Length: 405
Image (cartoon, rainbow, N blue to C red; front, side, top):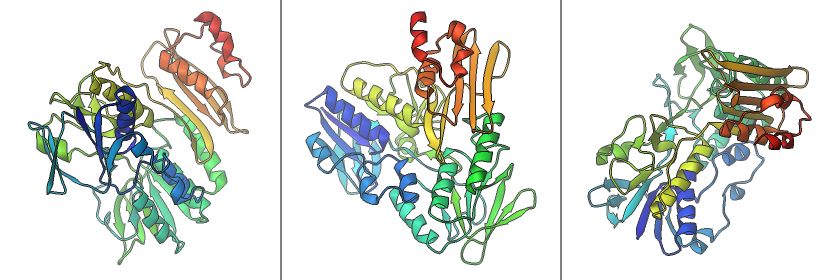
C-alpha cells in the first residue's frame, strides 16, 4: 500500500510519522517543494532573533527519515494531480502513482492587494529562505514596519528588535493587538508591556500603498496618514494553497473541503493542516494541524477515526510574555458568566468564561502557572463547581478538582 503525502510541514510530517507507527510495512513518500527537512515554523522566530542557529532549526537529526523508512523527496514541485488515476506529476516530467494520498500543502502568506507590495524591501516570513533574505536586508539597519498585530507579527517585531534594530513599529488593522486571542483588557495590558520593551504600535490603520523610488521608503494609510519605513514585513494572515486541488477538481471553498474523516470529495484522498477546511473552518493553528494529521494517519491505516474539530488553544510566549488563550474569549449573547483578575503592575491578566456552569473559554496572560490545567478544562468543557472563583488565584491547587470528576 503506497501513500503519497504532498507537503513536509507539520501536517505532512506528522501524518507520515504516525502512519509508520501504525503500519510498519506501509510505503510512504513525502514530497516537498522546500529543499529543507521538516522544521517547526516557530523556530524561524528564534532564528530571526539570533537565539537559534540555522543548523538547529530542524525537528529531527540527520538520518531520522531513513530510520523511519520514510522516503522524503525535497526540492520537488508537484506540477499535477490526477485524482482518477491517483497519481502526481513532479517537476513536469516524473509521474508517481499511489493507493492513497494526503494533501498537506499548507498555506502561503496573505498579501494585501495594494500598490508597492512587490517592492524591494517588502518581506514575509514563512520559510527558511524568507528568514535568510530578511536578515540580509536588515543588516543595513533600516526602520522596520510590521504589518499585522497578530501572533506572527508581534513575534517578528520582538525578534527584529532583539537583533538590535530599535526602530520597529507594528501596524494593526483592528483597534487592538491579537484580536483572535485577547479581549480589549488583555490586549491593552500586552501592548503596554511590549511598549516598555521598546516596540511601537499604530492601531486601527489600513495600509493602502507602499511607496519609494527603488526600495521601500513610505507607507500610506487609508486615513491619509503616512509612516516612513526602510523595510516592511507583512504578517497579515495566510491563504491555503489550493491550486493543485482546484485544478484536479476536488471540492474547495476557502480550503480543501473535507468530511469528518478528513477525506476530500475524492475517496482515498485526504487533507490536513492549513489547507483543510472542516465544517466550514480553517484553523491555521499548530494543535489543530497535529490533531488532523494523526486522524488522517489512522484512517490511512484502516483504523477509522473521526475528527470532531479542535477547540482553539495556544500556550506560547508572545515577545517573551507567556500567553494562554483557549476556547471562547469574547462571549456574545446571554447565559455567560465571566470572571477575571487584572494586575497591571505585574503584567498579569486572567479571565474565565463559563456557560451553564461549564468552562468554555480562558485567557491567561503573564503567567504560565496553571495554564496547562486551564487549557485541559476548557477543551473538556468541565464544570469547576464551587472552585470557579478560586481558579484565578496564583496558588490554586488544581488537584482539588479531582474530587469533582
